[in-house]
Structures are given as C-alpha cells and as structure tokens.
Length: 454
Length: 103
Image 1 (cartoon, rainbow over the protein chains, first blue to last red):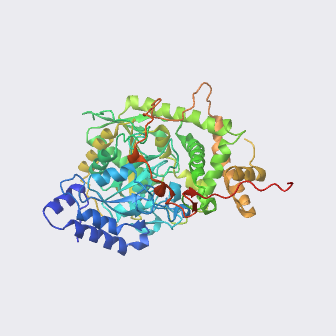
Image 2 (cartoon, rainbow over the protein chains, first blue to last red):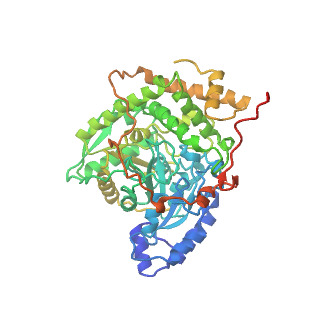
Image 3 (spheres, each protein chain N blue to C red):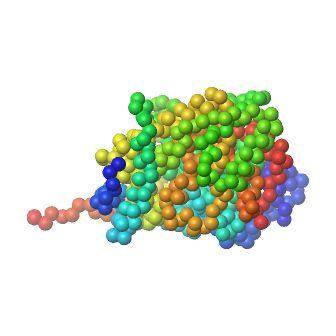
C-alpha cells in the first residue's frame, strides 16, 4: 500500500477513501514488523492505535496522522522507558502535554521510539535496548539521541514523530536520516510529562518529511499548558518580504567534511537565488559552546537523575547504563565543593557571552545558516569507545540550546556513500515562523520531493 | 586546573549514590580526566564583569494559585502503581537506622 508522505496527502487519501484509517494503521504496523532490524521502536502500541482509529473524528486537523513518540514522552497506560533499564517496566499514570495535544487533534500513536538512554548521545548507540540503525545504510548510526523518531519517519514506519533536543538530539538524527527536524525555542513547547535531561536546555519538538508538516505539528504542541512555568505565549513574528541570512565563519572550519560543507554552500546559493541576502557574520565564542555544554548539561543531568532511587517506581541506581553514570559523575564533580566556581559558574558566564554573540548577529540578520553535523552519519561502533569524540559531534548544535533559540534541520541531498546531507537554520527566540518560511522556500525552489529510505 | 584523582572519583560516586567497582573507578578516572582536560580551555575566556546565565526565557516569578485541582492529582493507588514494594498504602524503603548495640 502506498501512503503519501505529507499530512495533506494522507488526509486527502482518507477523504477520497483510497484507504481506511484501520488499513492505514495496519500498513504501518506491517512495515514496522518488516523493519524490526532497524530497532527504531521500543514499544509498539498496536491496541491503542486501533482503538484510536476506531473512534476517530475525521474532521480533526491531525486525524489519521500516525505518530511515533520518543520513549522519553510519558504515555498514559503505555510503557515508557527513556531507553533505560531503570524504567524497563515503568507504565506512566499520565501523558505528556505534547502527547495529549496531538491525541486531541486526532493523531494516532503507533509506538514509542528508541533513543539514547535518557537522551544521552549523538548516535543512538547508548540505548539500553540496542542501537537504532540508519535506514539508508544499516551499518551506520541513525544519529541521536532521538534516533528511532528520525529513523521511523525516514523509513516510512510513521508519518511524523516527536523528539527532544537538548544539545542537538532532534537536528542531529534528522540530518543523519534525511528528514526535517525542528528544535523549537526553549519555552515554546511544554516539557510537562517528558523525562527531564537538562532542564535549562530541553526543547521538545518534532520530525516530518516536509517543513510544512513540522510547522503544522508545532502549531498544535506549542503554547502554555499551565504545567510548565517556562512556557510563554509566542510573539507574533512575521516573516519579512526581504530577508537576510547570516553565514557564520566559525561554523565552516577545518575538520568539517568537504561534502557536508559543499552541500551547505549549495543551499546558500539556493537562498541567494530566491532573493535572500546573505551576510557574513561572526559568532566568536562558538568554539567554547561544547565546553559550556559539557559542564551545564551533565550538571543538570546529575540533578535530574537524582530522583531515580528505585523506591516509588523503576529499578535502583545500579541499573544506570555506562553513559548515564559518566554524565552523573561529571555533573556531580563540576557542581561539587571546590570546583563549582571553576567549572559551573565559569560555564554559565561564558554561556552569557555565547548568547550575546547570537543577540548581536540577529540585529543584522533574520536567520543563520550552518551545517548540522561536521560529517554525514558515521559507522556503528566508530566513536562508541571514545566519549570525548562522541561529545565533539555536538559542536554545531549545542550552542542553540545554550542560547534557547530555535533551529530547524533540513535535508539537502546525499553524499557519495548515499547517506543524507543537510543544513540547519537558526533564528532568534520565537522566530519559528521565519524559519518555516525560509525552509518552505528552500523546499519549493529545489522541488523537494520526500522519499523513503530504501 | 587540578588533576582528577582516584579519590575524587570515589568521592563523587558516593555523592551521586553510585557503587563503582575498582575497574569502573579506573575507567571513569581516565575518561573523565580527558573530558575535564578538554573543557578546561574555558579558563582562557575573559569573564570579568559577566553575569552568569541560568535560564534563557527572561521570565520572572511565575505564580499560580495555591489550590488543589483534583483533576491533576494522582489517587493513592495510582501513585503506588509503579512499585510492588508497598505496605498498608505506603512505599516501603530500606532501613537507614540500625538498633543501638550498647543498650
């Protein structure tokens, strides 16, 4: 059965009765079964999906949109593990705001997507339930931490999916799997019911094949819910008729793969042709973003993972996997007496400088274009033994989280190995409408036709 | 920046309530030293008169009324549903005190 790759397409097929909702759900379940080797799912919620399909009001805006939720999002009555052995049999008593908002809009949950345990990772290999494979080549990683969410959409196992981005965990796997991934502004989408990683950085977002669909999902999940006091009502940000995109020289450095660089430069040319003005800019503290990130993030991780004591739910602390232990140790150390000033406080001050860089840049430009990852997907196992090398993979993504600004990863073709390439657009806080406008322009001009991984 | 020692690793593990074996302690000592060494390049940044950032929303003092909304409460059964270590409607925890031996 052929399922369209856009929300509009699926809804048109449903209203033309090309297939029923039940047939749609069955087809996705069959595909998930046939692609078990990708390891994109931890739990498949077949019964729930058919139950939702049965009572579905087709007039709802997301009716028939099949979604996979990262297994970090609480789903009432459906096992939620954070891909960790600590929560291997945890069944939540309530759902995350993002989950219930999508459900209310008519989306059908097909299952819970694999990810790096507790969202700690850039490759998907830190899942306690095995790595997710890249659908374009199964010897390669899918990226992480929202590994299964990106792989599921790329392989056609779900139309859309949700994820969280704390240092690149949506943009990175979107880039490695060739789909669109949105990391919203910090404070645009409620974190209620999402297992916390680093609370000043966590941004819930989504994946789809097109910018238009990511925008649609975003419009349903954004906005205050009364349960997350960091969420603000969005300011109305109108895209201008003549826009400027900044090209930061610090993101085109030695060590970046030539094919990745070339692909971003080609995207820049596309924007130029569309009438956007390109401006050279500088974000001088970029090189320190990884240092700041690997102090602030583990510090917050160590605090958030303190609650897992095996008393009220879940297994005890001996069940933490290696990467979680590493981050708890690092975070506890940088917060401990005698080291707090040198590491944590220093990092928070440099964070202010990073934010200032972006503030100054956004006085001159409406958005910034940059590579997402320094390379295309790497091989499974290639970086797994060297934590520092894995951490350095976040070099181009973590600064957006530290500054709390939105970013969208957009596919831009394939490298010689047949692996997806892409770029990211970053905007000032709450400027998502500008990013969507630019992203849609790019996909329109290039005649982008979504395709499934084969 | 000071070098990370085995004693530091053991101390931090204790603070974080993690039991590490000898081999694990050695492994984390090595791996964390490499990471700490890398991130200490931050010390070269001049941060004189720079205020630290701990959040990016700019929001201040977000309040709600101190009221109970039953819709948003878990029942006792729901709250206890995550564990089978319960007793008379309470969570059961390991003893943290032991009986005095000098009585």
